[in-house]
Length: 340
Image 1 (tube, rainbow, N blue to C red):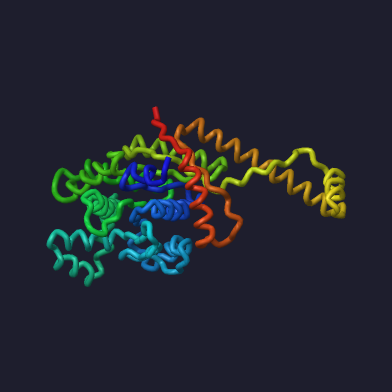
Image 2 (image 1 turned 45 degrees about the vertical axis):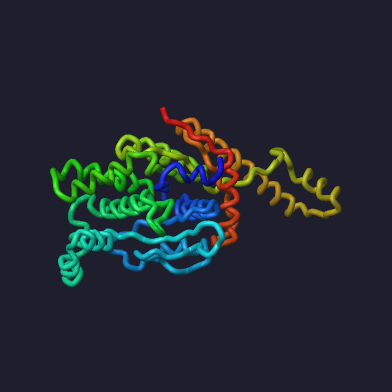
């Protein structure tokens, strides 16, 4: 499948996974690949109302060669190329509430909330409301994309909270529907639920690493998202897969020294022992990862998109391009699978 076809499945792709699996990196890689297909992309990160600095949002920027933390206003990450573009922003419930009030002619109330310091309290007072405010803003962006408004994004990538919070995050509009009998809160919740439940508008991409605990949590999260949030699952990205090396399992110290001598290299016994141990460890890691990938395919019948492990402490534009190329190859062999 071509990248353009893959990213045309839904206007909003929600990316989530267990903390530490690299969902922010995957969001950036997906955005970069979509841009190479000519799309205008906006990556949205969910921020809390209390965290003003949001230093972790700079992780996404660093992929594109910047150290700036994301803010409420869109920041350009990839522009000027002949193809598409990538922009990013961080959404907080309080700032989303201010914009909502402005759109509904309540600027005076919003100014009073800001001036009195009560904005955070109001934005987080009702359970589920902070998540609703953020999702409501995403819904507004999606509607602009559907209408084809000038400069509106053609694809919205929502870098959602980690899997433990993601289910509550996406379930919150359903809870507010039950709690609110009428009024603007219920109307907003209804519109967000409509977006989340329409696969032409919104789908979920799960991110995992090929390890036992992340795979188990990914399978559990997938089931909960479908049962409680009603969102369609698009694919699962297996991030950090080690390149498979053809290592013979029984290669001992003497064998290594003999092979090295045949290549004109003198290998000491200590070095040969270290190489032999490293080879056995790498073989065990490869086998363990392969077993978890197979288990994931058995327990969660979703298309898998693999990204390789990056042997670098810092991820920047070089790693972004390498991972984008790997994702392009994975998407080329992608085929949708319907869950039973």
